[in-house]
Image (cartoon, rainbow, N blue to C red; front, side, top):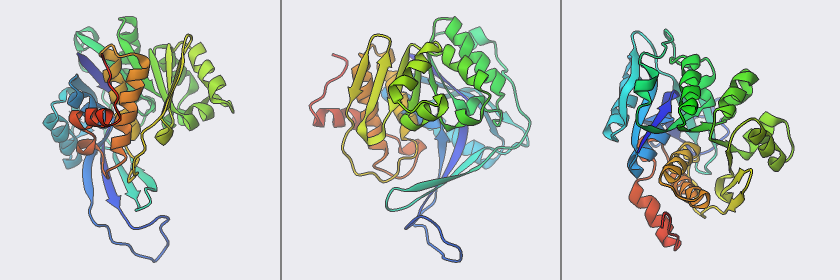
Length: 315
């Protein structure tokens, strides 16, 4: 089964420190600094580790950060055939400071360079693809890969009958609302945190907010609730799934990993409840370690956690 992931290829610099907030003139030493693939790389790596044929679409700079992202994706058997390396461009980097209480703060350094458009035939790119994943970051106009190309791919996939997954994300607040609505209309599944869906819709109630997303054309809405699990809603179903109790060290990348596992479950013909359960397990394991990219869970870890809780999926 093949899935394609659009845009948002960034490098993460993860810096574990003693405590937040930082205070002027007070110095802290980091035990280590991790340069890792971030953003949708987490989704791609999770899906590849679970057994899907994962394919990245987007762009990175021709700097060492871009090379690092591509190397880590390749090492996890993610295809980079449709990733363009932009000459003289700088790859987007997200700097994450995370303390011993699992509090974190992000500082973004946007990529710089010429914006590139889709360089392949759409039908060729989507041949054999069963799922397409996109986040609001890919539609925000600040990526090296054209936001209009990202939306074009996503909408064309929907027209071709391919299952489409859109993560609302915090970037949706700063994007033209019409663009986000177009993505939702083309979505089979919309994923969002409680805070994201309430803020974007302007509703104070997550159920009402979800109904608004469904009314825009999405078939299914998955609300990510962190350690509490998730809620999955469609016109026919409302499913609440408890999370897994773990010791949280760093929540960065958990939502991306959750999305990858949910896509895997959906394409594997798991029920919505089973897809949500394996996604909850994947997110839970992700938060137990510091770092993104190569640090997301392996397939065996995910199924071992399910087994530990006497949970079977896909049967």
